[in-house]
Amino acid sequence: MGNATLNRAECDKWVSLGSRVWRATTLGDERTVVVEQDEPQPEAEADHAAREEAATAIERELSVLFARARSFSLSIAAEVHPELDSAAYALLVRLSDIEPVRAAEVVDKSGLDKSTVSRQIARLEELSLIERVIDPTDGRARLVQLTEAGRERLTAVRARRSQRLRDTFTSWSTADASEFGRLLGKFNTGLEPRSR
Image 1 (cartoon, one colour):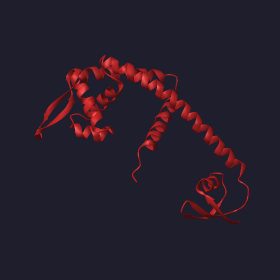
Image 2 (tube, rainbow, N blue to C red):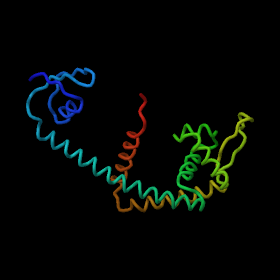
Image 3 (cartoon, rainbow, N blue to C red):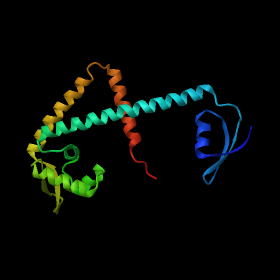
Image 4 (cartoon, rainbow, N blue to C red):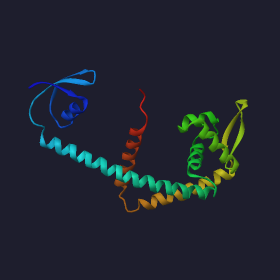
């Protein structure tokens, strides 16, 4: 056992490889660490390598998934309206979940910037998929909601999309599909911005 001054990366490596850290004190960009001076355990190194390999595989598969999702989103947007792009389609779907709503709330709930939301709302309005109506609680304000035609088109397209998704999982066991949904939810939660 002895003292060692390690930078953060080295300290993280010690911890991730399984060396026992008895005390760590942060000093600026360094940590003074008292560790047992035995070699990292082989099973800890193997676990670290396996995690790296898993992360690489996940990154590769997500790249494929995102490329397919973009293509799928474009084709499904065109089913709602031939001139609808995938970004405006995504906003239309979001609006259908929260309508009727003020445009400012759409900015808050979509995570998009104000100019993007304004542009997409204007486009959806041009395509007669959404409309502005008077807010019944404040006659000076306007709410955005889907038109009847927009709602009908979106409902039909979502039904077809859901069927395609169900078809994808026909060869999966119920347990596998449920576990995939659970893990995907956990992954999405992990991607949410953390408050500082």
